[in-house]
Length: 274
Ligand SMILES: [Zn+2]
Image 1 (tube, helix red, strand yellow):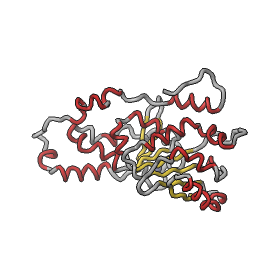
Image 2 (image 1 turned 90 degrees about the vertical axis):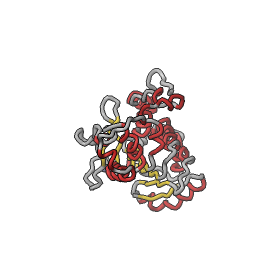
Image 3 (image 1 turned 180 degrees about the vertical axis):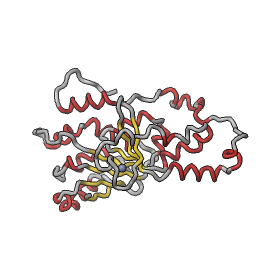
Image 4 (image 1 turned 30 degrees about the vertical axis):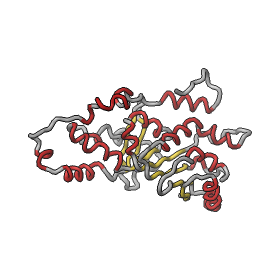
């Protein structure tokens, strides 16, 4: 439980309070805790002999259909009003508001279309729900949406996610501070960044991770990058992960130094400038 100080003392305090106040409600823990797993009724169903879909089609064929319906998407996780989380399926056409750094229109935020299949009945839910998490890329453009999503889904779904793209901006990074390292942490919301990294490194099924540092962070000295990425050192993926820096001439020139500095610290990522 995060400690909230009384009163506001700094920009960091402002961010911390906003972060805490906007957090979505957590799932009721007792339904999904290890102790009650045996009585988890999510996956208990009774046979439906009247359903030709479930009786005539083999499980393999059904699985193929569920995969076609639920896989291969890029899903933007966004924050909605009233501390609710939502998602936008990216059209991947270049005309996506979220991809271009904007906010999605109310119509674009999907209230539940992705879950429509799983909601049909408990058997289809059991057969299909995990595919939604394993077969898609989850993209987090809103700075805090990754840690906000975490407590709103059962932990086994969180662990089923394989591909994540995270865009991180550094609001107020220009705020002056005598300690140059602290400047980065203060401005980014250190607590939020560390929590986000912890949420990423705890994803048991993660196979692909891309961190895109957005333009508002441009021209931070290269030596700060490994310091900032330190909380991701534990992220050991079989094929490494990707770091995308803003397309600044400075970074283009220094890309080898950045790469070398990260490797020296044991941070296993491929750096590119986009
Ligand atoms: Zn998009």
